[in-house]
Image (cartoon, rainbow, N blue to C red; front, top):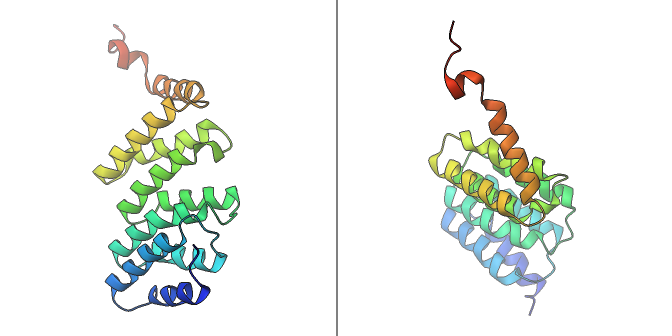
Amino acid sequence: PRPSDSVVALVCEALEDEDWPIRRGAVALLGQLLDGTEVSQGVVAALVARLEDSNCWVRQAAAQVVPTLVQGTGVAEEEERLGVERRLEHQDPNIRRMALDELVRLADRWPTPEDTLNLALGRLEDANLYVRKAALEATESLVLKPNQGSTATHHVLNLIAGQLTDDSLCGPAPE
């Protein structure tokens, strides 16, 4: 059953608490209370704002909750794509790592498989090891994903081929 609006409003107030454990708890509680229900744009906006919280644990909790709640809000695909793309550039590596998981989950919402794949490939040079690992896993998932695999595989092979030169294959040409 959906919680009352007064309960949701009370928990939303806790998102602004000065203590980060309270904010993190409020994010998690909203995720549990509202999972599978219609969520207002105001609640979504309040949770999205926690993606920029000063505390990494609050940001991480928000990154886990926001994607599941956004699904039920009717947020336009374009908005959802832009949100993922912003999170791929976020200062917090945990947010970037989770955004890669979202990217794979929402892959069919990008205009082309190449667009989706390029976003994952772009994180392969991330400063954070765990983001690079997640980017590699996302790339693998995208290449193996039904309805995208052959196009994505072709794109990856073209990218690799573009990096190869005659010198890299055989060494410099003899003089």
